[in-house]
Image (cartoon, rainbow, N blue to C red; front, top):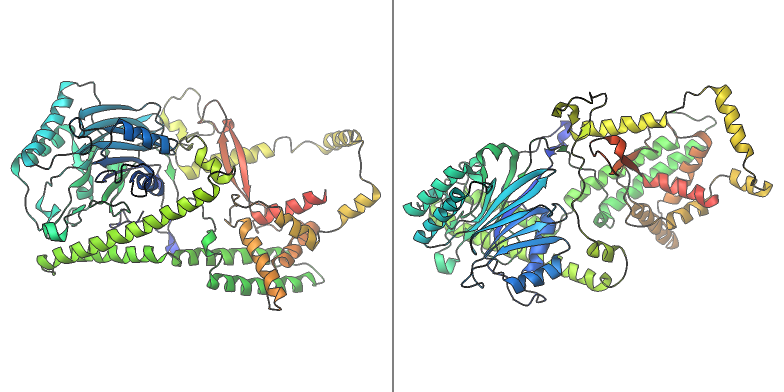
Length: 622
């Protein structure tokens, strides 16, 4: 999501590289979508295709919608279209369903809907949701779309207060979000002015009773930012921050990344959002980097790989002819250095190569923030400039969003009716991803029932998992040779099928260029790479460029030739320590019993693609 105002600053390690770690969190967002657009669910201007895309792109766990304009029939159509990944809960206006309305959109990829409950407080205006957001932890969210008229607005907040006072068994909201149609402070309007006393007092009393605070304003006490802009020809370009998210005072420390964002849906409101975590939630890092496919055609990157690869190949050929092999400087160390260099270059280029629309959005956001918060600019000029920038920002977001929608429609038209990767992803039943939330500490006291026996830091949990599986690999490794060797011999004697002399001689030969080309050809696309993040597609792209340029009698980097030297060196001398050739990324998959015990997970190792090409070439020979 494109952010207008940054959240908490990212912590940075030496060298300026981001090392941000956060608690596992759920994004809660609120947006007034101003109706459903065209009522025909298949019409391009029907807004729920855009809502689905918004939820997916922003990974919003809970999306609160105002002016949802839903009724039973429209809801049924939406669930038929998007029910695999979205759960939509709504409250319609009993008098006029084509106006008002509030709804919750639950992302089933992120949250379980099994134990959720809802209460309708004010039909079409206020709805309460209780849902499991973290393992065993329930979160209660109050979604609101308040009336615009001051007296009705005041009565609305009083009705909500009476609802909670009437039944103490109903859970109080941890979060309240939506279009409040009122501001509490003059700074939240442009031009600045206070709102009527009756609704502001009623809202303030409700917030006091429910112990809720305006999280964005508490985080940015002096910043000016707005969520609703009146058309310049109607309201002179005035703006207000009427869309807000409140959070319980005692939960404020568990909320971060408060944002106001422009979205690609046709509406005159902006989206507000926050990330919510829980006490005891695991600490998570930024994840591993994977080589993005869109940079494979970047001229600067391909020229760098050609130059660096050619240098590496020439150095490897010289090294292969040395009379003695240097354990610290050889073909394998050259390959490790080459991979590291092209990976660093790819990461740098991927940060630079952003779409034109994204670059324009970032510039407009920076300009808008500057205009709104520069005290030297006269208010009349601020109003006009902010309105113009907001309109341009909205148009740019809509254009970018529509372009993504067109790409999605084309892909669905081409692949939506064919059994394959895309069809499977679209049609499979969605469920929240498993998160390793805690692990038993090694050597814990079984009688200890406190939380102290559990580890929730992801880095330390990874260490527990790694140490456990390393220990398994060493089981019975210390068996005495006088016992081990005869046992091996007994097992070998039971093997009756052996290779012929011709097969034996063939297997003794080192790999050839044809072996590696065949192995690369048989390696499937869209497979998860290993620790270095380089997929098969990169090596296949380099080989294709070599063939094309060679046919044109142009100099080219021979990736197959370099891999041939590398693999044969490994066959002859083994893997050089420190090169990371055989290192893997272990992903534990939960099987059964206690999910906090690492014993109950099956490990899957994601190996680097160069390693897998090597083993595939050997397997083909066998």
